Image 1: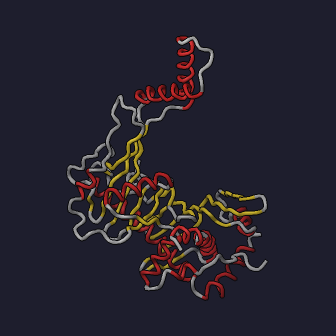
Image 2: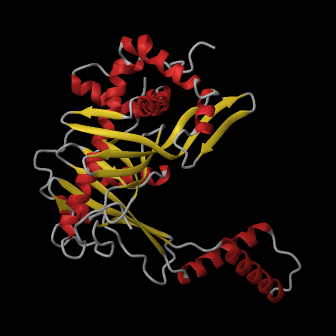
Image 3: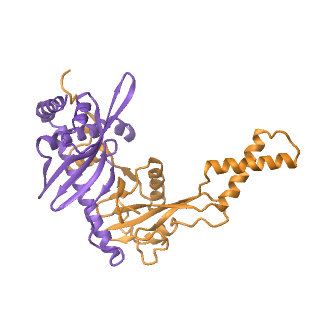
Length: 207
Length: 173
């Protein structure tokens, strides 16, 4: 369940610079290049990531421009992943090693060969694994330039950042005490350099 | 200075903000006047503090129903810094619950007031109502942080605020 449908955690960003004047035109094409694609059955692809409808994670077509909810562009980042449990992989790999030792009449398999067997087993198991799906809502208020991404995991936030750039050709600035503060100062007409001169206060008073 | 370096160098701002906010909620009922709105905020439940000593980084997490949060106040008085706090924001007839962290000021386990619209009947209505509630809370927290920052870069910070804050912190021993 995403942030819009339920509750959750989120990271905040601000668009760096301004989007082109008529950036909404052709947005469906741009998004279309990065929509979510299902992992096909029988493939060994481990992961798929892309945009889906924020109100319906099974809709990746946006046939009626559902991403546009003025003044927002809202979508979910869907991540599907096939995972093989480590113990299952270990067991299947050991069984495969045993079979090969018997067939080839070997007492011992070199490390390299064991790694190849494990990789082969992993690919075979991946085809049987059902992918797990997760969605993370993304809401861009293009009238203010603020963006919310419903995730606080650094690795996934980096992936989101990258996909946002690829899709919209716009850089994001992550919000933190410094970037938020410099934004307030700029709005007031003060220099953000005021923050650079600050050092930690001794809030506990004199020892 | 590169942005990342600046972010790291000013990491203390988030910790000071949470400590100051706690102090304000305990001493002035956490009431803030933002434009035409009055916002009340209070610490509720779990709070995490961190401090470094010769043995390395120490983390103290306190949770409970007690209003005085005695153990957490003691940890603060023992030079630990607030790195995460559970907050309740009250504005008009609405209440928001969330955890705020000091490093990014990210909102975690964010709960808005109950949304009246039904997803099946009017999905766009639900979206707009939810966005209004999210942006209202974010904007209120931004307003409070801006108020802190205004004070933090003014002479009042070291002249009046720090002595009062220190006194309150040391009362927790």
